[in-house]
Length: 322
Image (tube, rainbow, N blue to C red; front, side, top):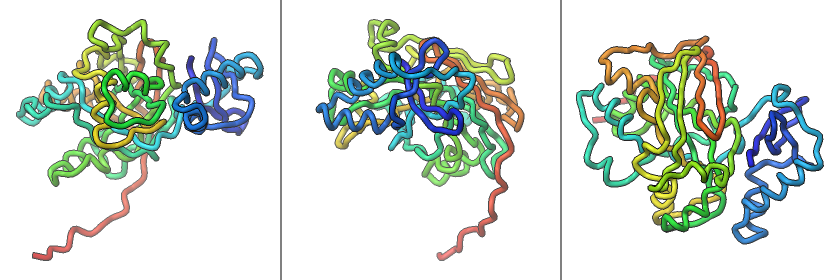
C-alpha cells in the first residue's frame, strides 16, 4: 500500500493512494499517530493498524484526484538519521578535497542527525538557505521505522521497517564546508529543507525487488531542469536498511516514525560528487528557478523548485577570550 498526507480544500488529511487518487481516512488522523496508536494497542502491530485503516478508506471514502491536492511529507518524523552508504558518492566528494574514502567509513554505517522540522512535500518550493552560494541536492531513499526496538539483530530489524519514501536532502555546500572545519556539523548546511515523499510505500510492495544480498534493487534518477544528471541503483548501498537500523538501535531506542536516510546515491546523485570528479563547479550550483526531479523505481517521483531564501540576520564574530 501507499499512504500519503495532503491538503485538499484547505483541510489536512491522510489516506491511501490508488490509481492516481487519494482515498482519505474516515476520520482526520496523522499517519504517525495512527502507527503509534496501533503499536501501543496491538503490541507492535502499528503496520497492521495502518493497513486496516487503509482498507477501510479504499472501500468507504470519496476519492480525491491527486492533481487536486497538495502532497505533504507522508509523516512528521520525530528523528531523521542521514547515512552515507554509497561508496561512489563518498569517493567523488572526497576527490574534490584531494582525499580518498577513509578506512573508518568501511567500519560502520556513519550517520548524522538532521532537522525533523525542515520536512517539505513532494512538490513544495525549496528556499535557498540564508547566506548560501553553493546550493545542492542529494537523491536518497529513506526507510521509516514502524515499531520500537533497541539492540536489534538484522533479522529483527526487518520487521521494524514499515516502509520507504524518497528523501531529497538539500545542502548548502559552502556553509557545510565552513562548519565542518570546526569538527561539528553539518548544521546550517543541512538545516533549511528536506523533501519526503511523494508518499510512504509499505515494505511488502518492494520485497520483489530484494536481491540475494538483501538489498532493494531499485533504479534511481535525478534531473535538473529536465536534464538527467545522475543515475544509480539502490542495491549499490554498502549496508542494507536492516543493517542501518541495527546500528541506529545500538545502545538506544528507535521508535515509530524515525527516518533512516540511505545517504546520497552515486553517479551524480548530487552536484558535489560531480564537482569533485570534474574539478570544477559543473553542473553549476542551484539557483532560484531551477527544478530538481527525483524518481525512484517502485516509490514514485518528487519535483521541487528552488526559490529565493531569506537574507541572513548579521551576527558578530566570536569574542576572543584567550
